[in-house]
Length: 249
Ligand SMILES: Nc1ncnc2c1ncn2[C@@H]1O[C@H](COP(=O)(O)OP(=O)(O)OP(=O)(O)O)[C@@H](O)[C@H]1O
Image 1: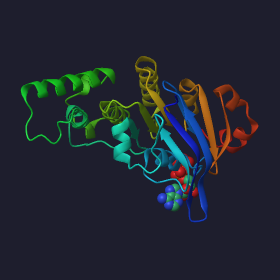
Image 2: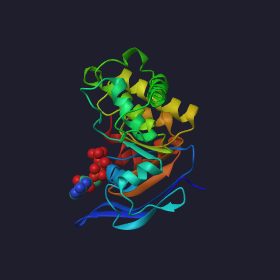
Image 3: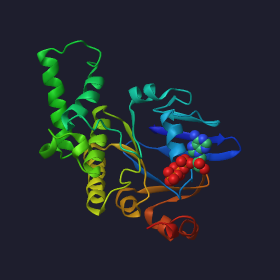
Image 4: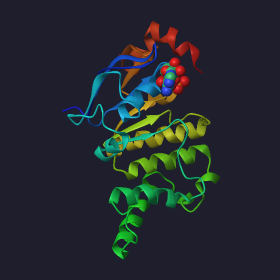
């Protein structure tokens, strides 16, 4: 059974069709990219999947269950996590403390007034695991606000992993990054996909990132699917070149 099925969803803002009859099926373990020029509807499409807006028309199934009208926090509980174009971390807290928050939430400890010694050890162990997984060991005591944008993004991704997602939605994970940071984030995503078989959908502008990571790409333009295919098919498609590739770096 597919993990995510998006059936013919549309989202209208007044007369604007931000997303227009888009369908997508994601199998477990897949890494799918969504690309398209500015204003193509990519973020709106993510907002529909993660429940920030309901679709005007259409249906969304997660693990076979209809989640079309389900609020975001319940989707998170079902195993859907998301990162944003603008990194969402707590800059005044250390890397460890940023990670501890979702770890405690996932373990159900967040509402407890105090944690037992075993509980503390469990949380510490999971935080250690996430730090190792995302190669943050050398920076784990630093305040997140003092880290580079790439490291802050890494912390954000590690925070979403703390929730043990079955589907991770990444909205432009390398936005605003330099070359080295873009490479590092790409390697991290590649590693998560290969080692953990984590299912991901990724919106990305940087074609180097897309071509390194995705086996299958969906191109949106003006809210509709322009074309779908392998990186080689997308690179060779004249409509894509006209609508998108010609306009990017
Ligand atoms: N809440 C909203 N209310 C009204 N219009 C919106 C809203 N959100 C998005 N739009 C419009 O919907 C269209 C699609 O926007 P969206 O942000 O989804 O595109 P995008 O492909 O993610 O663009 P970018 O690459 O610039 O992030 C745009 O014309 C945008 O102005």
